Length: 127
Image (tube, rainbow, N blue to C red; front, side, top):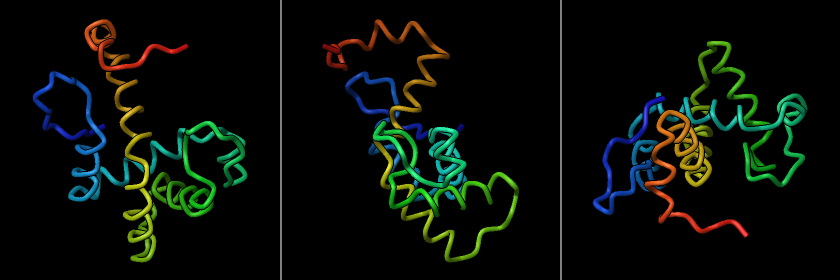
């Protein structure tokens, strides 16, 4: 997955919400990739029912579940999106920068586990 490349000067090694938003505003391919990420984060029964059943901060919010799932399925099957669906996707995906940042951070930690210790100062301990 392509991610925003500009990093802040506070040594935070992960892609920030602001960086993700900047890339979403300029990169149509990245917006499509992020829609697919959000769809993949839905549970399998949410994907099947095209709804949001759980308050797990993953995937689409309930108001986006039907259209988000429909658009993601169209992207996965290689269908061309209508102009209306492109506009809908472009406005929808920008609402998920926090979730996308968490996704990219998790992926980066999988690929670079040594970052977990180096970046512990950036995260609150879980109680």
